[in-house]
Image 1 (cartoon, rainbow, N blue to C red):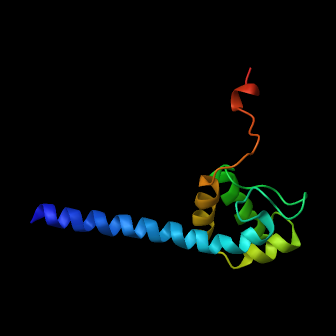
Image 2 (image 1 turned 180 degrees about the vertical axis):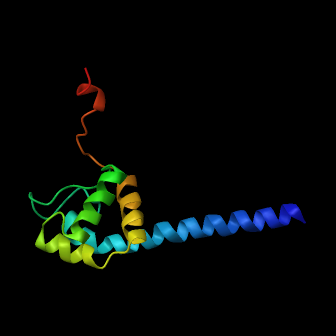
Length: 111
């Protein structure tokens, strides 16, 4: 009985996590219009590549666009309707994508 309950619980948690990733991917479709379907090929040079970016950076940037602390007319409008959960899910999803960002290791700054 306990094993059946545990299996059912694990199946529910797994399905919920998968649904969350799917929901984030669906929400990210709007972002992909400018940042590119793979988040590596933006439609313009002045639009950043986001795939593989740090999750906390993406979450902070979206929160700042939402609050107006960071200014960009298009991004402020896009972030305006995002909930805190939307921001977390989008940041997690986009950071999980393979990217070709040139990230400088922290140890290069520490002496």
